[in-house]
Image (cartoon, rainbow, N blue to C red; front, side):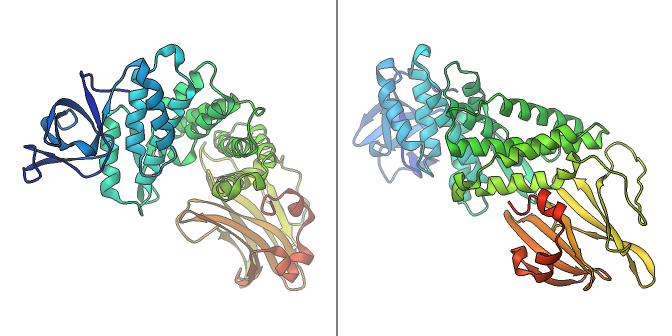
Amino acid sequence: MIFALAAALAIVVQDHTALRAAPRSSATELTTLWAGDVLELRGEGAGYLKVYDHRHERGGYVRSEATRSLALTEADAPALLAVLRFLRETPGSEALGISYGAAYLKAVPARALTAEPLDAIARMAERLADAASDSSTRRADIAAHLEVVEQLGVHMRSFERTGRMQLCYDGELYRRVLALPGAGAEDRAHAALALTRADCIDPSLGPVLRAALDEQRRDVLLGIADHDLDALTRSRLHARRAAVFASIAYAQARRREPPWPAAQRALTEILEVHPDELGEDRRAEYADAIVRVGAVRWAAVTPAAQAGPLILSDTSGEPGQTCVWMASAESIGEAQGLVVAVQPLESWRELWVFHPSAGRWTVDVLSPGLDDPEEGYVEFAGFAPRARRLLIVREVKSRGRFRRRFEELRLDDLALVRQASNPELLADFSRWQGLSWRRDTLALH
């Protein structure tokens, strides 16, 4: 991290601080300074400081009460760390906290450096990036704070995801935490979780680069020991491993490599998660992992010989084409139809239904949702023979929220008859759901 070298420094502690051409309130405002900006002190008087602003490369005057003096000696390190600890949990103060953190890293001797300040600065950088990605956040303040921390050596990556810009911290200090001898288990685990976020993967990555990145994510997560972690962190770690192994399994299947070891590991990891330990704030991480593993769970099953009279066969296409999970192929009733799971995207699995309609056989595709593909799966759960109703479950992420629905569809035209958030609320679902589905599905977790 970079800090201006000067005999005397000050940190701006108030947003919208005016840098003026003269030491009076009526003087021309040269630019606006923000909390976290670092200034070189060159004099003072009449309630103003004469300063030089290296970020804007200009000198001027600021009100004394809008800044705090700063020293970077070893003796000043404890006081700087105290301020850093105070600011690291204060939303909206990320730029100021990062600036104090950078000052602390300059002041503390190498022998005394621990993971705590690195983790604190990285957390604030990550939180600032998340705020910048949130369309409901005040953009003017966030943009200015991003410029402040960029000057301090904190870098962000940006790309478009689902029609909006996503900003992510580049993770430099998290990687330093992982490499730091003596870093605590919780600090290492949090760094690993931050470095393996799925929403910080550029969607434009090609399959080769994406596969290499997933393998790196896997190695980072497997490098964290489960013991010595609190219950929340341990469950988060298992959920993240499950999601990463699900991605690896899907990519292996598209390359015609055996996907079942990675898929089985994904299932093992997701079953190690204790949802009650995650709390309300982290339940979305578990839901995300459930959907990703649910989409690929058929990769863990070896296809068995199909019993007639309806039999589905497949023909290999080019590497990277749609994954048909042949192990999922199942006849409906007395040769009244056939279903098979098809996964065209990493975390998006559809259900193809072969059934007679208007005197001829046809195939219809049931998708997890009607919106643009984000995350989701739909799966066959059973068949009510008298009513000729297909039992399915859909779980989908739409506009950042996860929804799960249990449905009864008419087999003839796949029209919706009933739906509920709980299968026990549907009489046919309760009676005719498949035993193997109930045993293996993740929709009931």
